[in-house]
Image (cartoon, rainbow, N blue to C red; front, top):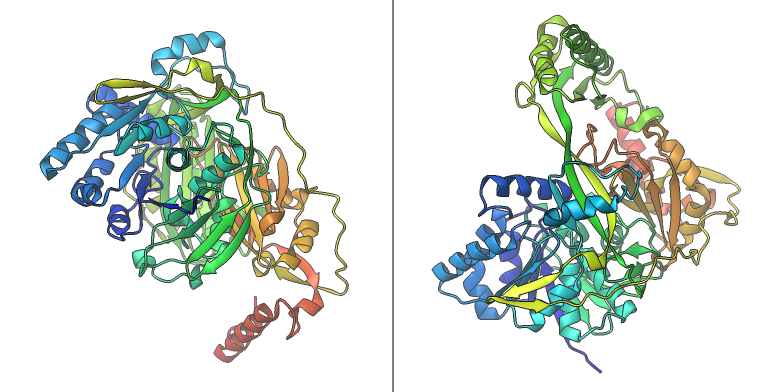
Length: 620
């Protein structure tokens, strides 16, 4: 039996993550590989613009700047590096890295994975007339970027050939980890359970410290925010792995922190579709294996699909977003009236100048709980708020006019208005995402290293078939709740949310196994949809992950167009799970007894009430 473990650390979850994370992991002495993720849809568009201005650009320069001082230690310790920091110009990134290596006096073999950039094939793709995979919209005429989400096989091929560093363009975030494990353990393209397990390991660490206590619901329990530990997965040949972090760093690795990351942005947990495998995470088991150590097992997989997901971006007019603080009595009401007045005033002026109406407007009063809709509390009477106005228009000059006229609020409207955050707002181009599916045979994947092109054979896949969940997500037998009391959802569960295009994903994990039947009964898809009805969800779907007592929800069309085009203050739904934590849930009254599972929660409420009474505070 192969008892060898491969340790992989992730130093970046996005372009702009901490520049200190790579050094922390390299100097920990605990990793065999260093991986990092730099790309998102908006990043691809920005990199495309950069390369258009300078053919030597098109990759995140932070990657080279961060890695350069670490190259001697990386070479000395034999750490291999895999990253998608190649962006849309992996060869330029390699050249910059080669110069840094030469300056450091080290020699490293750097391979690039190419084929994801489909801009040279746009005319051929347009002739196929693919439609948007969510909205069925027609293919855009003028694209800024067009990239296929590649899988892990090419990364494994590059490592098999002896690469010390592998640079990819766009690939699924988890592929940088899976490719390593395919290489190290010789996993085949048909080892679906193993590929799903390796993908899960990559998914857990792909967002950096989000699995080591970052964004955790119980944030007060997480120590050391000032020196957060970045994640390490110790992976075995059977697909199981242990999540941990460098000793002496901040953060927290528990079954709850890892569970929150597993449900993050996965949609259907029984059909998480990746280029190499369709994953089923419903029966994943988590075990606390020691302080800051969580053992993960139980992922399953089936054959991948014959298509790649492709993300294209295109220009779609202009937008402007402006914010200002408003203070004093009834600040919420004042700010809301100001926002509406500024929109109407500038609409009238633009129409008078012969311009069209705004394509979209958004007025949100942050602090008055506008993002909560009908569930907001004391909205208009808030005494300190931030007014946000977002506008979209095809004519940049219409938004320039708004930027000039918005300053009128400081003298012509309400007292308590302070200066604009960042000064007068300037319009910026709207970059819209267009996602579609493309046959894998259309995408020419290849690896190049040292002037040699290595062939990459990608598994063809089979047509996707939706399978029924093993555990029904509705029609469950309601537990006996009589007599009952109401507690907020946070007393029973942890939660994490994010975006899937224009949809919001909300994962809810029961704190104890016995809470799941109550959550299953009380937290229906209909009730979650009603909580967010002000965002007009087109659909609400619910799935169950019984392996670690979780539910996952997907709310369709609630993000105002998605992260790179939305005018919302929270365009990626990052706050949705925490907003839902206040939802009242009926539980047996006996659970709050001194020997009940919610005894600690009941004690905390009593202590809070006593403290308020002693300070003279009144209950709301």
